[in-house]
Amino acid sequence: MDAVVEIVLPLFALIACGYLFGRLGLIGEAGLKGLTRFVLYLAIPALLFRTMAGGALHRQLDLDVLVAYYLAI
Image 1: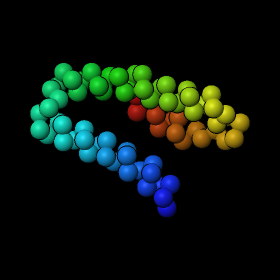
Image 2: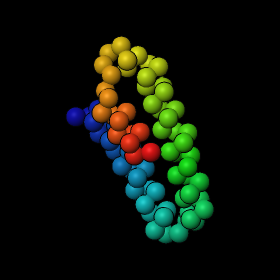
Image 3: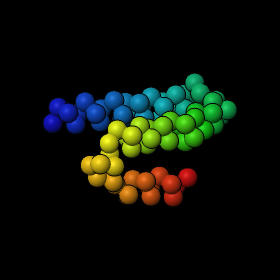
């Protein structure tokens, strides 16, 4: 249970921070566009590459994750 909280809590805290920054106007529309481009074109592909390079192919190739990501893009 502790491992789940350690993984999920920071993720939801980060989402809440982004929501609050957007609602309070601390990040403008141009900043949001830049952040979105960074995440979609650099951060997520780098995370996928690191995961695949870390041996995920040897353990189990989860095609659902790859299909969901590339269909959305």
